[in-house]
Image (cartoon, rainbow, N blue to C red; front, side, top):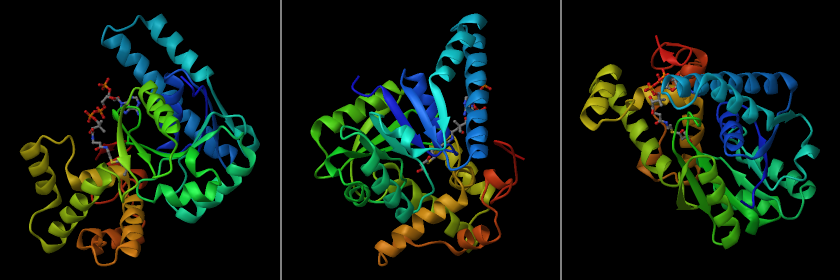
Length: 297
Ligand code: 3HC
């Protein structure tokens, strides 16, 4: 595979998972965070997840305890953390997984464009912003793709690989091969709002919130209906809590600004109100529901 050394910017909810699956795929990974405490927290989550996967492999009879522990240790040994951007300079691929703010992402890619080797491919894990705008800011638009992973990255089997009109054909193939090495099924997407999944999923989640606002059904009944009626693992309200109300608001607000006349892209009042109350879902212990760790209370 052309991609051997990977840089990941951000070791939060998505970033730590991307770091882990890239290392599981055999890549050497260096993860950049603004402060050591954020690195420690993200790397701690990776340790827990690797231990969990090892335990599961033993339970499922796929490996002995010794083999599973050795595999987890080998994966962990491929991961290092840094707070210096300079350490990303010789990566074959750098994936951005920072806060969903287009100006911050563009500023980051401008800086990375100046310091990384000319062959480095850049990728954004953005949920909803145009890949083309970040590609231009990086100064190397032909070597830029979207690599959109899903939460929880360790378990979800998809990666959307997004190309713009000027993405180099080989870069796109290399990005797809990387996604497959991470254990994901890569799907090709054009640079359109929300790509495939979020273009369908986010309006579905916001419509569920509007049903709740109108009093058409309770949160529990909406979720039960979609779980049992459609076979989804989570209903739309629970999923919003799981993804994060702030992330969902960032996505929809970004779209409202760009496409003010599109009815599917309007922010429900209940979403804005809960975010204002800092009820962000699973990550703060309360959103539409109350949470204890990764499980609904
Ligand atoms: N690492 C390792 N193992 C993990 C893990 C992790 N991060 N998270 C969970 N596991 C393990 C659990 O410990 C459990 O192990 P066990 O079988 O030995 O007990 C196993 O994986 C299954 O976990 P759960 O018991 O929590 O099982 P569930 O069956 O409830 O599955 C779920 C959890 C996979 C999250 C499932 O509910 C689901 O698929 N939900 C929908 C998620 C979804 O739609 N994600 C996409 C969101 S949209 C998005 O990300 C895009 C963005 O841009 C907004």
